[in-house]
Image (cartoon, rainbow, N blue to C red; front, side):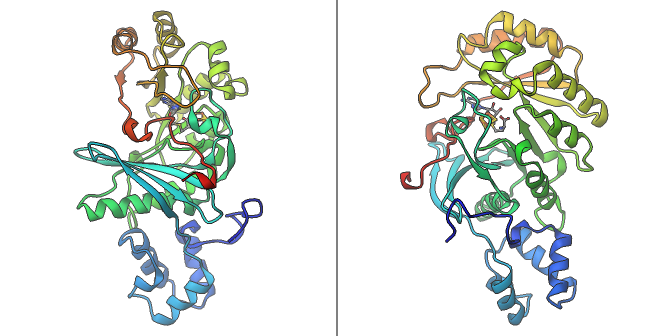
Amino acid sequence: MHSSISYDPMNEPQLLDLAFAALVDHLVDLGEPRYRAAQLWRAVYADLVTSYEAITTLPQGLRTKLEACLPWEALMCAQSHASADGRTTKVLWKLQDGETIESVLMRYDSRATACLSTQVGCAMGCQFCDTGQSGFRRNLSIGEIIGQALAHARTLRDEGRRLSNIVFMGMGEPMDNYDATLGTIRTMNDPKGMGIGARAFTLSTVGIIPGIRRLANESIQVNLAVSLHTADNQLRNSLVPANRTHPLPKLLDACRAYIEKTHRRVSFEVALIAGINDSIDHARQMAKSLRGMLCHVNLIPFNTIRKSAWKGSDVEQIHRFKSILSDAGIPTSVRQSRGEDIRAACGQLRRRDRTSY
Ligand code: SAH
Ligand code: SF4
């Protein structure tokens, strides 16, 4: 096993890190015909097999060769917790270098959504987020992100269901690991594999402006969610330290440019914390800042985190906040996060010490 310091998942390609074109090149380099890549791709991403040995469409000699030269990175499931209603499952994954991450599977009546991590911890340090408070270790590789989704897809298949939606709202800031996040989306979007539609992905960002600009120019159009929390620039500086680098007026300009370029609605996520960002004045200020934008606001009651005395706003206050935005013509919903009983709700995922599970 690698040590956590020297381990670099980008060093040697592993199976799940490769885009389809790179997989074709790899097999051609091994002297194999191109169609072997298509067989392998289908087995991994459509049939959801878990080992080369199980891919019986490939000759035994090739399976042995691949085993030796193209490692199939496995995430080890260290713990799995189901919520009391059985609809939410949180999994703690152990990575090859011993780091740990979490992902969450949420079952709804007509869809099933995996909430994936993109980093071990997060460097953004938001005050209200357990992930941010547990510090940053490293980026995840494409394979480590896809591995979470594949495992949830297998669970759902065994329940007679399919994975339909992906949200990058687990641990980490996806725009801080941009290339791997987009690579993951492209692989999962391939109709010959998992076939998850572009519109079924939601990338959530704390508000990294260059990332929003890049995303606007991608050929694949996914949903963009921006974690706004407040339209008060000073308050946002203290809640979201990244606001000092990407201040609110510029962030909103970048969102407007994104909308103009893509003609797509941006979601703004707002975690309402009692007495901090949930006053009527805060709501009015937000309504003023967002008026006229093609957007949608999701109000989420703040979920308690360790070492914080903050509490989520009460239902009445959330509805007062909502009415002000709705009256200003801004589509607004109130979202309940899932899985609070298993600490799987927004902001509650956390990097752990290796010894603590
Ligand atoms: N880093 C990205 C994506 C991961 S966080 C981002 O910040 O957008 C996913 C969502 O959970 C974000 O909207 C974030 O603001 C929200 N969140 C974090 N801590 C929370 C908490 N304690 N209660 C409610 N939502 C929280
Ligand atoms: Fe990172 Fe998002 Fe948590 Fe902020 S809210 S610390 S950006 S994961």
